[in-house]
Image (cartoon, rainbow, N blue to C red; front, side, top):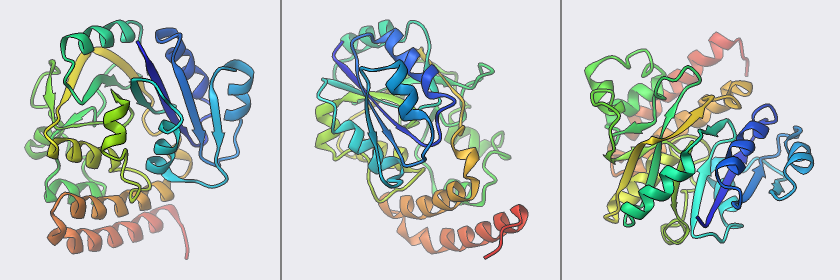
Length: 279
């Protein structure tokens, strides 16, 4: 299968080796491009020593996920591209399942695997429906995980349905596959997003153009969710709040953005107080 893999890293030197090992095990001939987002860690050195075929771009500044991913994808000329997080590992049989699925469903825009946590439980944002203003408000306040078993969150996260092969509205940006020409045609990720929310917006644009996303539960990956984000919690939280406001506008729900912005300001203050930040 003619596939390229794009990975954006930030302080990912503790996971990138296992990630790339899983990629080359499943796709020995894949072209892989890693963009290191100016974190100054050992990722480039690890790749240089262990994965000499892998192209590495070391950015001189943190581009964020969307811009960094678009830059990495631009280096790939394969028929298909895989967007992959550096803390996500492809499980054995991934490639065989993907090739079979593509052959049987050639007109799908995105092929989305079942992503599990290290304990084998389906990742929270593996498959979703499009968020409503209420969902975005809950995400902004940082309480969505606590409410994950409520009816409104179960519907959003699709935990009200078993993980069967089906078309879905939103997949996670941790791992998915699509045709390179389609990625280019739609302009890739929206670079107005620095971190978080860009996967939802991409899926929204894809649906607006009449394309579909296929969730394939037999195609599996394991995700150590947020491994890099744990090292810069406030940066991630702040970017997430800003992304939620941006997402409302992009999805045509801008009338709610002022309310969500206010919730975001409150959330930022609470976060800083809890963490003991000043300034």
